Amino acid sequence: MIETKAPVHSERFSVNKTTESRLSNIDYNNLRFGDVFADHMFELRYANGKWDEGRVLPYGPIQVMPSSNILHYGQGAFEGMKAFTAKDGNIHIFRIPEHYQRFNNSCKRMNIPSVPYDVFHDAIVQLVDLDRNWVPKDELKSLYLRPFIFATEEFLGLKTSTTYRFMVITGPVGNYYREGINPVKLTTMPDYVRAVKGGVGNAKVPGNYAASLYPAHQAMQQGYAQVLWLDALERKYIEEVGAMNIFFVIDDTIITSELTGTILPGITRKTVLELTRHWGLNVEERLISIDELIKANKEGRLTEAFGSGTAAVISPVGLIHHKGETITLDQERMGPVAERLYNTITGIHHGRIEDEFGWCTVV
Ligand SMILES: *Cc1c(COP(=O)(O)O)cnc(C)c1O
Image (cartoon, rainbow, N blue to C red; front, side):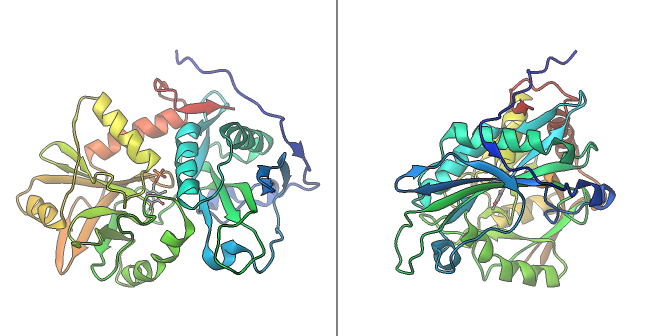
């Protein structure tokens, strides 16, 4: 018998309820990622050195001044989290405190005032509770949660904004990759970099993604799903993928790039490390070069590669291209380590496996 935590609720914020739910118009059998949004959104405003009381509103257009800092200088940050329907009918929100901590770090790096933890937590809980009928029931789908913050001051001079808006929008999602849980193909793009030490690669902030779109588009035109980023200095060490951290299994050791400051510290990455260490597997966080990977593959010692991220959870990598060399892995299915992780993490999401680490908030 799996012991579940008592569901939490919040009615902290005023609610302007939508008069007409859009839920019945949504085709849950053909959900993609990020193009459908639930009925409500949360909004909190910052001015004169403090946050206001916050509110829940119908999802819809927002007003910002054309001179807002975010539109010109990109002072903002975001998070990506998920809620799931558990076996018992409750909703599980995965690792709220971890996402808050990272959000807070991103805000700090962008010189944005922090949102109090209780506001972040209660806003998400209340919004998910209110739109709970939007949370997909089926195992392969979830409600994606997107908390984000942006600078709204009307001022074109380059300086830290004095006004901000924190918002949360949500929406039901299916698979992140068109490939579903089939292996994806990656390529390095040695002419481009994602982040440098001292920059903002370890913060979830808009500019990182804007700068990745051109190389990602080129990779896609060459038939690859995403770019495998190498370090900016030597263009040699593997960092991560566009929206996933990366893991390799070499000689039964699970290896992922260490957090050098240029890599986004994924919550799924952390979950993978915690689980595999808990299982007593050999795990290493260290620098790993693309040459080491190519060599390990030639020697038959590289048995798996997979990405980790909230969107896809665990995504097997079937092929990696680098300067004319190709590492080919299993093109058909996940390897055993990836599969065990995928089954365990999604099992905890959906209450099939006991949440012994206390990762889920039950709503
Ligand atoms: C969000 C993100 C990840 C994955 O982080 P999770 O917390 O596991 O979703 C990895 N890399 C980048 C660049 C990201 O933005």
